[in-house]
Length: 134
Image (cartoon, rainbow, N blue to C red; front, side, top):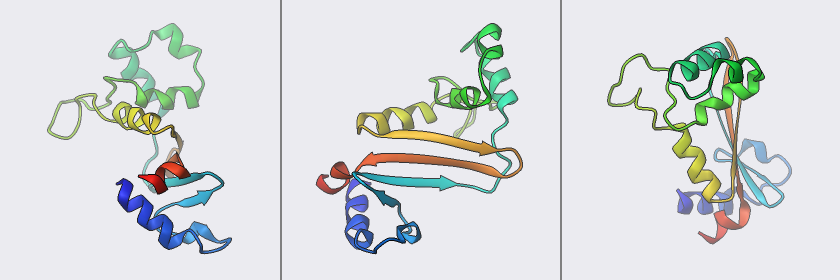
């Protein structure tokens, strides 16, 4: 991924002001910003809340005091899953926490925005120097 990132930055880094058209990411001062979004159903905060309580990742009292955005960010907890059954690709609770851990190891950030019925957008910010050096 790192060599792909570096080659895309070299190719699209000098495009000028309209960098949002770059197929890989938007370059901001000292950062590469990757946006991954869908036009699906969005993430249901109440479903996240109930699943986290059921799996004893948080208490009911903690959940009741959380904002909708805080509830959405529970998807990054180790062991979190909303799947009803374990399969080869879901339900094991290994996923978004691993993604966030790897991004943070690179001194990056990940954020999630979601709108029910409209979709979800993940924004990943990585240091530009990392993308070029590696």
